[in-house]
Amino acid sequence: MYGSTKAVVRVFGKGVSRIFEQTRGIEQGSTLSPRLLGIFVNDIVEFLEKRWASTVKLGNRTISALLFPDDMVLVSKTACEPQILIDLMAEYLESKNLRLYLGRRT
Image 1 (spheres, one colour):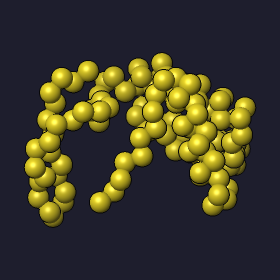
Image 2 (image 1 turned 90 degrees about the vertical axis):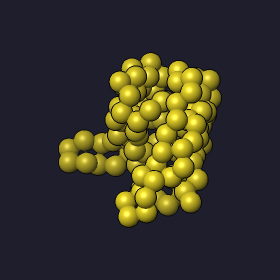
Image 3 (image 1 turned 90 degrees about the horizontal axis):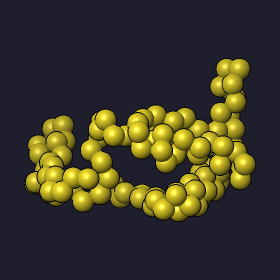
């Protein structure tokens, strides 16, 4: 979508990174994010609940995930469940010809 988008990262108190080319994804806050969510991941909660997903009681509601226009929160009750959820997410995304990218923090 973005042919030659360049970016910098500003870190509070540290300055600005060198300029780098963005080669993946869409820009943060893009108006395209909600549309892509609707097209590709609108049924993710149903998929998780059918395959297996932890649920957490929040007030009078039971939830297994929280969806936002360009983010998702998966919930779990135990320390071992996040890996199960990540594996399920990877399976779901693969079924949609998408890939789960787990960025590394430095």
